[in-house]
Length: 110
Image (cartoon, rainbow, N blue to C red; front, side, top):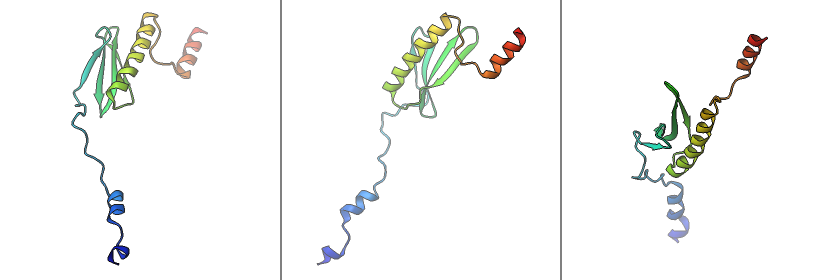
């Protein structure tokens, strides 16, 4: 009769369980991996991977890969690296131009 009146401990344990501790394979904040021809690196910023791409003289671009998983970060970094390599070799800008920039160029050319 006591078992009927008392709430089930099994159900209580499920609702009050804490998150498991972080795994021991977590990436350290100083992690860096060189990709490509050495002018790009995968780095960690605030627990999220980012691609650091250097091009030209004293020019660099840091782009978040928006993941904390190393395998996904490597895939995204390789795609971005290929895109950045193509754009730099073709003489194109890495960043998209704003409407303000285009309007200013038009006013100067006019």
